Image (cartoon, rainbow, N blue to C red; front, side, top):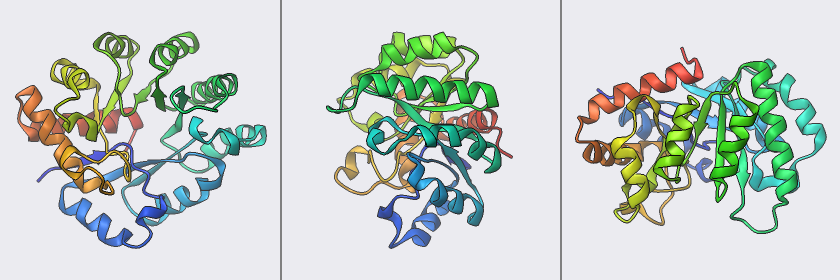
Length: 255
């Protein structure tokens, strides 16, 4: 029986309100029995905390996501360290940089990202990082702050960028995009990367696998990701499952 951890799933999203219980049962039946749920802004910290305290196997992370820049206030940033300490957080996240979406002030993004990295360093927590069209700057910032550990989720960078992250002790999170045959770059990274730096994720309800395009994603579908990685690496799915679960337990200090 597989024992998998979905290391990035937004299970507080309203897309799961109607069938949350059934979704969780499908996940458990598939062998995905633990989930890390990262918050995205101050407005959903309570909902994420409620999930983590009412359902066994959910672990919470809290942060201010760059896509929701307009919702973030300096007061939220000031509140974050105490919230992390008082609510059993396993990471600071989801945080990062997004230079793909227009209209998101780069200077404000940089400031929030750096300040949240400082918080993670001070509290000795790993970080869950979003990086889109911003890999080089993200890597530079992580290196400049130093003394950090964590994961760049939904990794879509180059083999060289992955190597730089591995050299800093970072992991990469791999989900649905690896199942697309045209995703040549990420498939090359996954085929040859050190297994000890690999984490599995879904980013549910987003980023469904290739044969579920257009559907709502959910943790049970992480088996599709596992099967694709198994084929790319020519390794048994059970072995990859065991190693990636051990990686997640170690990084996030899970019980």
